[in-house]
Length: 185
Image 1: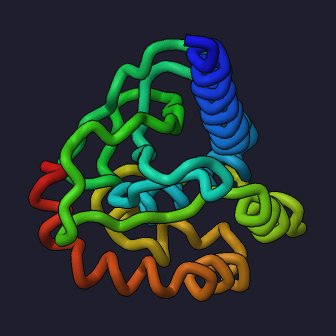
Image 2: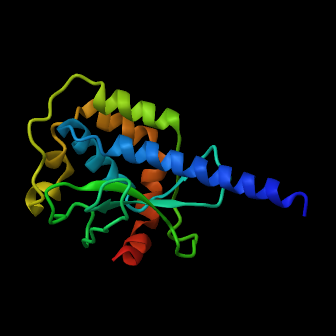
């Protein structure tokens, strides 16, 4: 029994660390500037099938990036659409990390590590880069369904760097995407 308190403190520390990482990423993805909101939409449309994990914490817990009507700090009010680029039906979307509770299966499991280095790269590519976002793209199918139109305000170099940085994940998305989209519907 002497070790029970130690195990409980270790578990509590792990939960605190996990909540801290979730808070950092949700804060990063929900900055209210147009530049940040466009970056977050771009990231969401690439990660919506990902099983996100924090690579500095014990392996085994995965999260999914979802759109919510509620900001961080409140319970997630999930926005459900058939495709990730469809109109969310609200004026402001919040990007939230939600634990994956479904059984992981190889044909749809697409792990993607979150860490401070990745966040710093996104910060440099999409936020620190000198460009202006004047308006967010429409969710009309002819705009939202074409990423070259929807994200034309994002620097081409930044989009290219993100795609190059996560080439393995992108290819895995093409390979596993059909099965994953079927589960997502």
